[in-house]
Image (tube, rainbow, N blue to C red):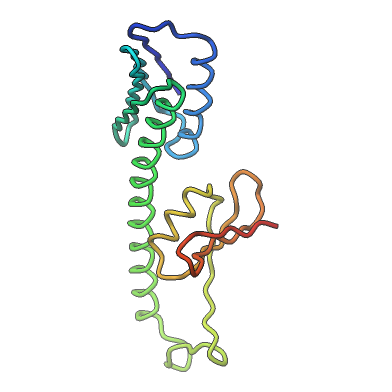
Length: 178
């Protein structure tokens, strides 16, 4: 991860530098190690703006935040880029899933059971196997939004525990952690 911070009309203090680095670390989990950032921080009277440009092999993203406080401007810009990056990663994941579904459907139609009859679920219970890599809570939120099921079971990348993210009746999301 390569980070370049430029200040216009403002001196980049060690506190701002460490704050920016701390907020940008989460992109390593989303997009991998080979990314670079250019952060431009600007102050004009009471307007504090932060513009972040992310460049990787896969995509280039830009986020801009403008508020009366420098730290909240940085957070706003980071949040904008995070939404874009998660949306892009969600599209990649969904494409892989569609390919896997198409492959499994083709496999099921090509390979009938030994009796020549398709396998039926036991007593009305459908079984599904899921072999997934650990994911962050943000990725699980994306997956829940794209899923037809009202919940997502996943292994948390930070804690390693199995969590359940579900859609509540009031429209909000709930998270069950052990």
